[in-house]
Length: 172
Image 1 (cartoon, rainbow, N blue to C red):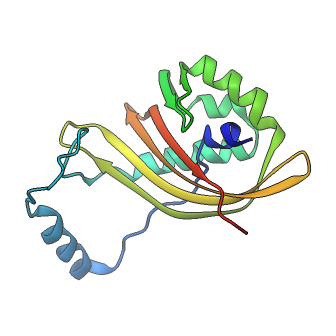
Image 2: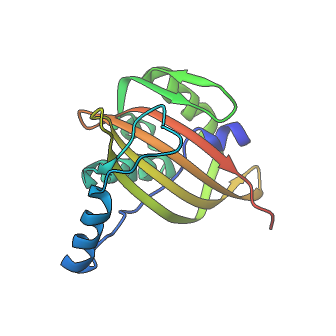
Image 3: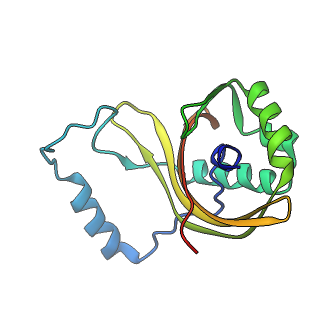
């Protein structure tokens, strides 16, 4: 079940940051300061806030998943997408991914979904990401388990081209 749930971190709402011009000015000042990090990230550094439309795409992606509308789900995934799973499994290509989802996610029901955060970012290299933290009660075969996850979705030309996923099962 862990591998099934971890395939997609389910999330579904826009990250809202609308506390006025004062907050935006404060955020701008904080993000424009160059910091000399102790540990240099291997991927990129100094992310900027990205396109909220990418968040909307991930919301629609998850909405289709909840509805088990796998055809619609495929509309949000690039043909060459790669999904990197917590257990080291790598799913390559939209067709392989959709087959996996149809075989495994049709058995799952997501209840009490709660989005924790959803942040669109752009790295120095131009890669667009949506970073998400969510939780839900996942039901399979009549048994329900609380699940929390963090996923990073990378975008190109309005499609998901990569996903890195991590899951945890909090004590209840």
